[in-house]
Length: 354
Image (cartoon, rainbow, N blue to C red; front, side):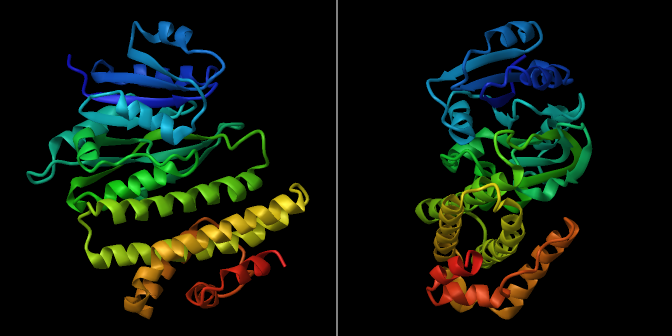
């Protein structure tokens, strides 16, 4: 049968884990409609043995990159070198939740919505802790962030010239935000089924707290800046000015809660990170805060009301409370906002690391 779905898997030295990923794909009820592309992101050896093992059951191939370029560009390479009607993404240490996962997503994107094509369908994701196998929280389908457990219409991505940022952290956030800002909301579907098990492996080379601060936070902010630079250049979105304004507020409010997290994380990692490296990292993060403020909030600040801020602030606060306890050290939100409104973001560096 004609292949309908390309599944793109970036892989860097993933020879031990990718077998379980491919097994979960081979067991899908519509595996005959799938093409799997492993993008070898500069691994020490190829995946020919793995491909040979699964070729009787799957249409699977490998694209080899000469050097490690990170997940974002590896996924983009997969996009540029495939051609099926729909696209899905998987990591090389994750699995689809059950044999009907891909069928459920495919059926929903195919059926449309009142005569309109569906551009994206998001499923729910189950987080799994790799060391213990513990099932953790379910990430609901309305996350709008993760690539996994979701399906995308290729024509929509190509028409809107949506591309991954050259980043190895947070590139899924920017990709999905651009997709949502480029799509009619009625053309984005949700299914409240767990379609994907995401493995929380962290990074064994570094303390997980250090990872979250030095890598995840920087990656997230860089990708948000990428989104707004994209929108400014392309201006291909269907959201109203009010919706974009609320999104800009939301980005800045989320920075404030990230700032609160910094205090708690710094207490945990000071002993593990040289002071010079820690200072450089905090300076980098705050400089990125300023760039994101200039790209988003600053453009709307003269039209933003206290009601706008209150609405978004309370949503973010509820999310933080649902995740458990968090630090309330540091300055208030309006003091935080004033620092950027007055162009005095250097002051924040001294507040975080006196």
